[in-house]
Image (cartoon, rainbow over all chains, first blue to last red; front, side, top):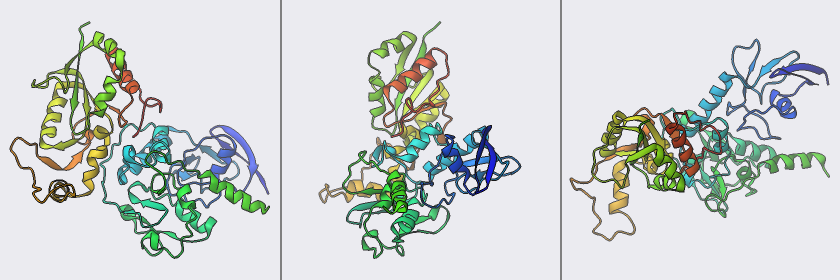
Length: 235
Length: 180
């Protein structure tokens, strides 16, 4: 692979081509906020948290889906990016009903952690308060649309790792919903293998096991990444 | 230097934020050296006075709350949203997903724990609920927010002691801030 040189936050980095800005940043201890990214599965640039500034490019681009190029100059820590990250986080919180105090994921939630990272103390946008369904039809797991941020990690894990294709996405805008099969109750799914990878992959309290009580949820999304690595090794 | 005046208010919340305020324990003596608490939920009957700092717990759920918060804003130099209900309506706002009539009927008429005689409360002395519950910042200008359900006593004391010593509190660190 061809070697190329680029600059990220003033740091000169020499690496191989064909990789994303996010991969290179992670390798070089440059911290970038992410939400829809999960190591091992395809990046889609859905959450817009990893936006970076690239010299000569007028708009911000997502680090997870933008490939590096020779002599690229990238900035990940400007005031503009921080402002956008805070806006994105506030919009996540305002769009659905994220009531941390009664959420199963309270204290173990990636969205909550993100709110601390971007120093969010209140939300400047009007809350939408949508009426969202909670699907409890599955014998082991619950899907709570109130807490969903539509990162689609569950959709991608189900398709790419388990190969079951149970999850998909329906509608657009604020009506967007993650659906099981053809928008039927999860418990009636003919494709779901009950493996629970979507539950582990979910960053919030949108997918959770019934065996867990409020505030006791502890997910292990890195388990998905490890699983992918182990399968590659074909031991 | 004259003593500052503090007021605390309990709107649409569970009073848990006030419990957390009491959890500052003996540090309340430090607060009392610098300020007088001139109004709080256990001070009865007085009109909300002019104050330097108003700590407001709870969301705006009724016509009464709306009237109160508009008055409090006029009377206060610094208005602080105390806790998740004031900031994002929290549990009080969970009725916003439904229409008010359904909520009231479910609670007072159709509730499983009710006998057949369940009826809608209707008395002139009762406050009138608004269709939706609002966080404070959608109604009035808020100067500082202390999130949490409830906010930690340390965070409350930190904000109070900074303001009473004429400093600007910075809540941006996760150890002071708490969601849920």
